[in-house]
Length: 238
View 1 (cartoon, helix red, strand yellow):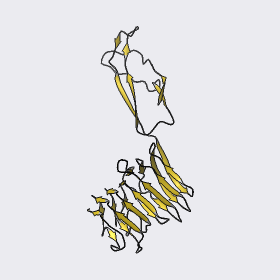
View 2: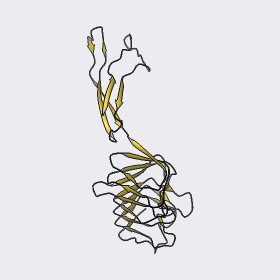
View 3: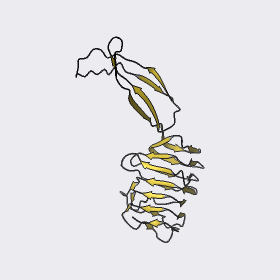
View 4: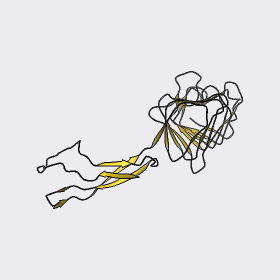
């Protein structure tokens, strides 16, 4: 995981109760490029004084938490797969188009930067199917992201936790834009804000089943038009 490059430094003489800082000569390590995301690397650090190290402090544990995020942005017309051994950051808008498929493994975590959206055009689709024990998690990097726009082929969302969408500043916007061609099942939507939860644009082209929708803020009726979306067993609180 990590290799120690420089394991000892000397910072010079110091009197009792004084402090001395050296910003140039430091302990150095190299973290492996392929280290998994969210791994703790631990070191024991001791300080000593005297020519023969007569005074040795008790070890102090230093913990480095590695965030190995992959940046995602731009346009894709070929398939893209996100695996659960990496953490992903959508740093700018993503557009999937033509016949591209975005496939997301169970247990994957995706953070999205403020005001960024993931859009599907042409026949592009998203297959985000987690499991009961390994949900796919969507989070805002900071304040809030702009959600999805499913205008492509049929997309599937199962066992997802979707939070942090902040798409209320444009009338008619929903968590899924103003159109959609998708199926949602066994997923959780919480801490989101939009004009609607779903705005189907008058087309019967999505289903939402056995999902929880709570602690969200919708500026109008959550489902619009209310008769066009299959809302079977959806908990529509909030």
